[in-house]
Image 1 (tube, helix red, strand yellow):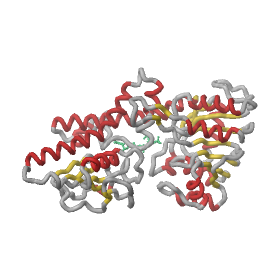
Image 2 (cartoon, helix red, strand yellow):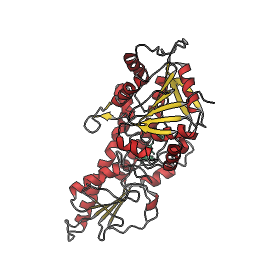
Image 3 (cartoon, rainbow, N blue to C red):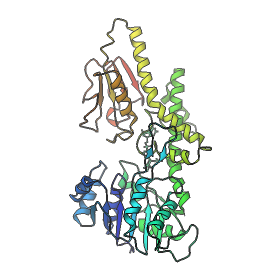
Image 4 (cartoon, rainbow, N blue to C red):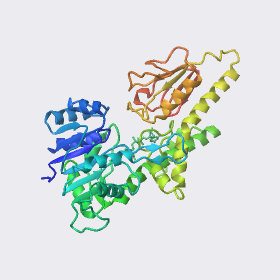
Length: 421
Ligand code: SAJ
């Protein structure tokens, strides 16, 4: 039997909402808080504002049972879970984007007046090393009356417990991974970590590893940076192979037959709000040592630009070989817009970036096929169901299962994933 009877979850996005729903489905009264009125209204109707397998059903059940209620402001509770965005400032313009912790600060400010002795506060948002301790400093500023935990000291006097427990779930499979993935918990003290473990164990079937908050923060950043570096290696290989006239996908397949080699897949670049962002938190804090991590970010960021240049090069070669063809009659069809296969999420999508840039260059001649999105407005390209007649160049940008083994008719094909016929 858990001691947590009611909790507040701040931030009802891709992670906060499924987490709130999981706590609610385990019998805890959950108040989900979001600054967006529309999001709050949608959830209170038992509906959801994001696409995620099984989530609509779960939210509808817990709202109907009365265990999940959404609101724009918090209340008192036994525990507070913070799951708000931690974006980058100047991501597009700077060579050293800076983490933006303002949403965590605002969340702490908003709950501070509701805190009472015995409360647990857990941060879930991916954050730079030291953020959990910073959160404790902010709380002590807002509520000097509370006794806060001090690093590595289990004094038994603390009235508030604070821990970091990063989410590790994969979009598309969030509910299953919330239940089964192991979690890392970083307490400001060990007692804080143990208390947070008690909270998550209400629905968690995976194991919890308890450590200090800085280690847990760095574990999360390490996981995503490790994937970014590995994808960058694959993307770099794809450029080297292209220059040498070698099929990179075949090369990787053969190299991966070695028992200790496991190269990931090259693609259009790295998108989403996690892997394309989190490594910067390390680079920004440790610029003198994070050379490989920074370079990986740069390699992955430059891949979409390489794809655009490649299209120009392929078209130039085509017209040089076919001088009688009309250069004004270029129809480009882009297959896939989302940031990864089989989802509808366009956040930081390299495929969308490529399509938009091509549409600026080749006005009225760019078409996109995205099986997971029905409608898109305000774009310079046209969303179509089938490739337009007379397509000159087809670009396979996203490895959607819908495209696998499809026969594509066009004079030029750039298949980044080697999936079409
Ligand atoms: N990608 C490649 N090649 C690959 C694998 C991925 O180009 O071989 C690209 C994808 O197309 C996509 C990007 O990388 O654009 C990121 O996709 P992903 O599936 O690797 O990861 P995310 O961003 O959906 O989720 C990651 C996960 N982290 C790890 O696998 C280490 C997830 O577990 C985290 O919870 C999530 O980030 C997060 O929220 O931090």
